[in-house]
Image (cartoon, rainbow, N blue to C red; front, side, top):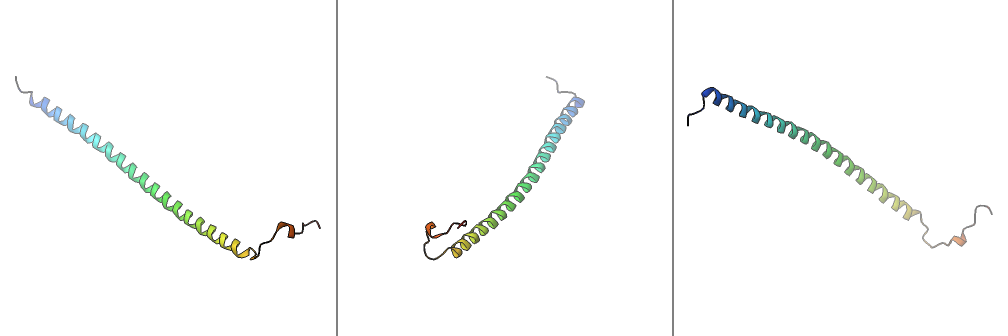
Length: 85
């Protein structure tokens, strides 16, 4: 069997390389978008964690205020006078 003509071989090698370059470029673009998305998601998670911690502090403070304002002795609703009397 005869070897292919050098011009045909040059085109085949070039076409294969160009196809590979295109695929690599597409993968690099996808990786860049994935990296940007990951950065955005990390920022969102960080903000949400900060908000969760702030809300937990507020709930703790409200519980403390409620406990401090509650009377030490037990009171019954029967001891309360309705506002219309």
